Image 1 (cartoon, rainbow, N blue to C red):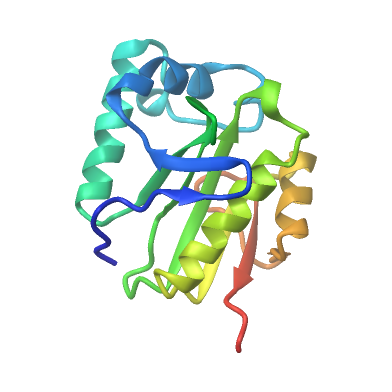
Image 2 (image 1 turned 120 degrees about the vertical axis):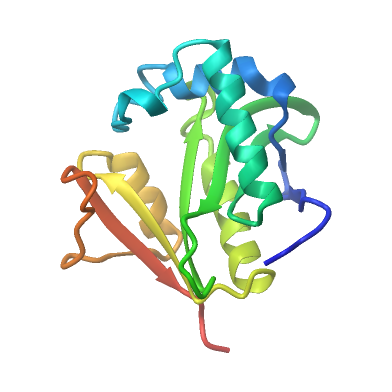
Length: 179
């Protein structure tokens, strides 16, 4: 899973880049905005309330990337380096064949197909570059936009699985297509 340098991904409209300390204000916004976080329940020690918390979070991400524990990208428009959202592959299984995807997006950019484009790109990266066999997504049972996004990208709702850490979450997964 050791991919160096950090993989920057591109789509028709987007560039997915490494999150940097200079993105701290955007990270603070994404992790504290009420609309973005409507369906996210974080423990107190994981909440981002100020720039110092955002910098600490970015440091954790950077360490996770350097230790080959996760991939976390800022989502930007190709023609503008400002972070508008984020998407990550993390929570890898021991055998590195399964990972969880997570994402958030500034409300100004929602309902424009941006997260669909980013998610499709990250799924392809996970299956083709990391050789994952399955990608999971945990989302709040009332988050209709996230559920639609996942279904549109081939994820299936796994009725029998439960999120032990959050009873409000439901779990979706997609398996690597057999070619």
